[in-house]
Each structure stands twice: as structure tokens, then as C-alpha cells.
Amino acid sequence: MEWYTVGIGLFCLLMVLISIGLPIPFALAAASLPFLWTIQDFETSLVSSELKLWGVWVDYILLAVPLFVLLGELIARSNIGPNLYLFMHKGVRIRGSAAYGSIGACAGFGAVCGSSMVGALTIGGVALPEMLKLGYGKRLSAGVLAAGGTLSVLIPPSLILLFYGI
Image 1 (cartoon, rainbow, N blue to C red):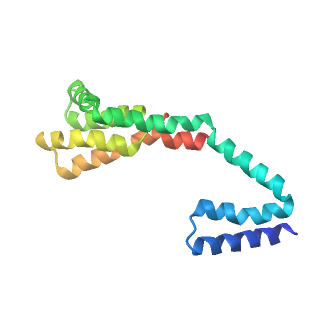
Image 2 (spheres, rainbow, N blue to C red):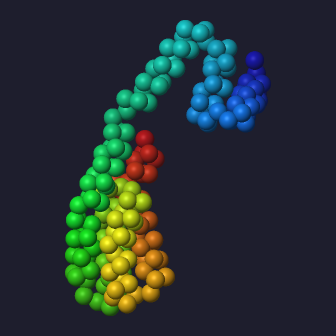
Image 3 (tube, helix red, strand yellow):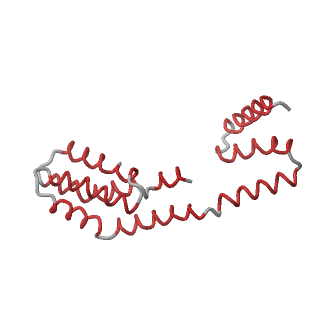
């Protein structure tokens, strides 16, 4: 078979499997198997598929994902988030220190937990009522916390950078 025949057949079979409702990872696997069987015999293709799946599952770098989630949950349920926010708020002695403290606390928390959602929820839950109590507007407070929440993806031990690195 020519390469374009295999490509068109694989694409058509993939579209059929996705259109009948099969999840995309399973549709990719199911569509690739018949074309793998044209290149190799059944036993060889089965062994190569098993080795590829095993290689993905035993990748020790992926162990960081549940550990990041565990660390984020531990910090979110403890007093570290509020203490980090209060430290950043009291340590910066200029006008707008609550906003700067929120961004600094989001950056520090994001460097530890590696997830934007966990960082924004933890620091936001502490900082938003405090900023409103200090006289900041709702729009400014929400904007500062939304911008600070995105910092956790950019600071190196983040989950997204881990996946890109793999």
C-alpha cells in the first residue's frame, strides 16, 4: 500500500469511530490497529502495542502529577495560603500592597503546587474578602486575582511545563 492510501484510510476510520461516540484515545488505538496489522503480523503488533503502553505507564516523571495535586490539596487545607497572603500583604509597604501581596502570594503558591486552579482558588478565597474589606473595587480585586492565578503555570515546577518536557 502507498502511504497516502494508508493515511486516507486511517483518517476515514478515525472519523467514523469518533462520530459513533468512541472516545478519542480509544478511537486512535482502534483505527491504528488494522493498519499496524498490515505492516506486522498479529503477534508482533500485539507485543509492540503492549510494550508501548507499558512504556507510557511506567514513566517515572509522571509520578510528579499526583504528588503536585497532593501537595496542592495539603496546602489548600492548611493555613499556609492565608499566612502566605498576610506575609506578602504586610511585607510590602506601598500603596496597593494588598494587590501586590495577592500577586506575590499567587506566584509563591503556584511555585509550590504547580496548578493554576488550586493557586487561584486558595489565594483567592483568602485575598478577595480581605481586599474588599480594605476598600478595593470588585473588578480590580477579581482582575488582580485572575492575573495572579495564571502565574502558577509559568513558574517552572508546573504541571503544564512537566507535560511539555515529557
